[in-house]
Length: 172
Image (tube, rainbow, N blue to C red):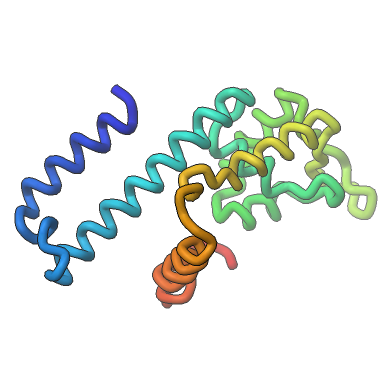
């Protein structure tokens, strides 16, 4: 079963449960439920497309995100990568092991502190990283929007994410 089929099944269930609240956009609660459902659908579509593209590169979404966070021109200690990803260092170790096995990243001794290892993106890693960045920036789902609509959507998404959330969901 594809993600789209699963999503449609979920959508039908939620619509039945919510009844007229979903079908009555004049009702604020119903409208909010519909917006959240549609945002979840867009998120699922993005994850599906990105996951498939990352798999073609031989990467998991987590490994792709880690590679995307690394600056090829500035080696980085694994603990700093963990901070950027907002996860535990042990998780980063597993990700870096996978990237190293794929010859996309190398662990090297830091020339300024020999006790520390830094993560260096290899030449092959640079090529794959560039593709990862392309995949993460893919905007085909938004191609049907005019420039004005895209600008409005950006402003609204910002408002309900960064601008509208007082709590922090990870490192800034």
